[in-house]
Length: 164
Image (spheres, rainbow, N blue to C red):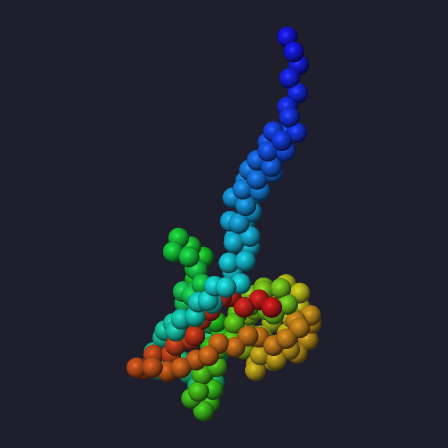
């Protein structure tokens, strides 16, 4: 029996086929992974006008929490698709809406009517009634939502939950 040694031409051909199949396999795995990582950069941000109640429901000078469905939630989110905002009807009759999320780490802020301040209980963030930072670690003011009155209903333009 003779030991047959593959010819150099055959060895090169098999090496190239192996390298080619390895590249095809890497592409089959790599392209979807890269697409998954880059897709959020190209998706449009969901923004929707949500009705939060009739104009008559809100008293002048009062700040109240209003709840609505999050524009960026998925169909199966259930209760977690609900979000909220702080809505104030100014004495002039115009509306201002602030996100309930602190700009420090996204904790929910609460309105303290007696102090006329928004407070974050997690890390001591304090905001004035116009949403600007009064004290604590928040790096910027509370996020404001655009508000409009349409057909007697107050509507807020919602988007993804603002955190930073």
